[in-house]
Image (cartoon, rainbow, N blue to C red):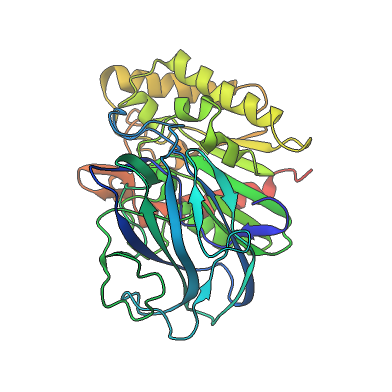
Length: 385
């Protein structure tokens, strides 16, 4: 994200899981994403070989866990067309190079950029990214995201990166394997990063629908704002407060919107004091990082998630603190809970019309539209200095 590259996608590529197998393997991954702009583009990809946030109770993947050693055999960007059927438009594949080489060996925890490449994407067509990865050992190797695919992705055994017709590809089984950042050369007003959990990621909204609120906010802001979504399923504030690879991504923003707390209260079983301390640590560290400029921090209240008992009490205490005495360094508070909550005294419950299903309080696409509309109006009224 550094320099002249803006995020070309609102799809979150944060990692919350890691491949683990008994034997080495070679596999190809192809993903279709809707680009924020079309036409003649200069692309560049950046990657971080680490797990960003903890999955479930952390038995497999924990925040800041380094990936293993693996190798990129080949990678391509292509015009993905409109079919999302495993194919790319013939003749449009452009090989991604790494320091002038078509492949790269990736070390545990390494971060790296690809070389720039030129590609033309017609309006309405997807960007298809394909790469073949070989693991270099058994055990834990390649970090990826596993919390509900929001885009169409395919896999194939072996080195099929240059296969434009995709005959060997099969739909990915809840496994998004993408570079951490896909950028295109563009001058922007500001770089906005959304740091959150599955609610920020957009989990449970329609695949390829781009109905979640970060996507709709990006549409409303337009291409003069770079929007990088690093929402991650099961993520919690203490993952970010550890000051690892995930927070390093957030520190790239001119504006950082923090929407965390649901999983801290739920599976993390954190007290209100612990959660507020973690949020304070995130804000403090973001203010201390960067190239000498301080990011503007927007802290969201914790969305309602139908908590009960002690968890409801923590939710209420934390949100009262965020609204009335937010952590030092917070520049503005956006009250997402007020938008989604049932009327008092049921504020801890999400309005049923905003639930993704009758028993799942993840916000749906309708909620995404309401949140985005409120945020854009609120953001426009904020001081811009």
